[in-house]
Length: 252
Length: 163
Image (cartoon, rainbow over all chains, first blue to last red):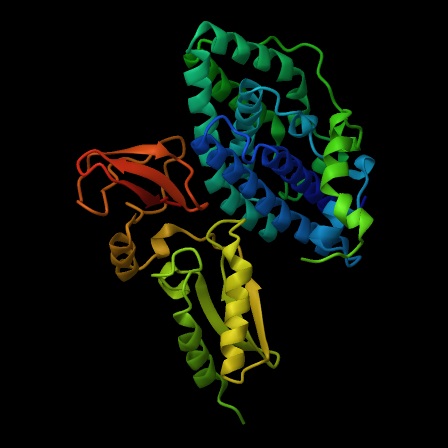
């Protein structure tokens, strides 16, 4: 694999993570529990979609086939999407949405802090922008985790159930394959092994404060980085891509 | 021979006072979004930087720059969006902070927020200047603002988040 091809694939991964989570969160627009939360979740969604736009634009430039960020977002089928499985999981109840946000924003905090030092100037620039936004996402998720985990019996049980149910999608966040290993040598991507222990430690602190238990590592789901997804992604894409599939090149 | 240096200065001044679409009392230059104007390969390149990655105002600002320069008969214009160095609230000028406060938005307190896992403290009410305020919602009406309330004058207000 050539370096350009690896950078292209890596950018699709980062871009798809942001796009799919952003789209998932946008489903909550006007449907959140109350107005402040509606604002919070849709603001986070907007941050994600903005990040996806910047990264996918760069992916298209690196690929060199004239694909814009919109072409990459709207014209790829499920098996060519490389987001982590955690990003596509349904919003479920509020506990499930918050726990998913907690797992992801804690991971992204360490990932983007390190990517700020990437040898690729565009990835580094996008990371330095993203990290400022991720900080707010982490605060939002961790505060809710403590409030609900250490709340009523009902909220505590729902949070613990969400933690247990989503745990099997977290192993994949720290997997590295030939794309990452190739770019790691050039200092373009970061080593996920130390990030895993930082993530576990930070998460443990939040969960302890929230009186929640961190699950033991058991069977972990994997496949996102290879285009093998849960049944949920197809449904997201069918909604997100409908207009461009039905009316190619339609513009506002 | 066209004096391009003098022109880049003129162009900068023509577009400097374009208002931010979300907060019309301050301009794109006040906010620090307008970075520079250069003459490159027969084109005037205007470099702007987004405050937030998904700031929906960016497209509007780009269109306004092109329109404004068109009014001055300058059409060989390219607007470049750059992410680095990342925009920070440090670039908001002192005059702009006064304008923000008068408009009812509490300006960012301190610079660059190097602190990562922490929250903002001591946000002053833009109306009565009291520091006895509390956060209602960390996410406000636009990506750059949070919603606060003042415990002294009981008014709610927007706070421009420090980034």
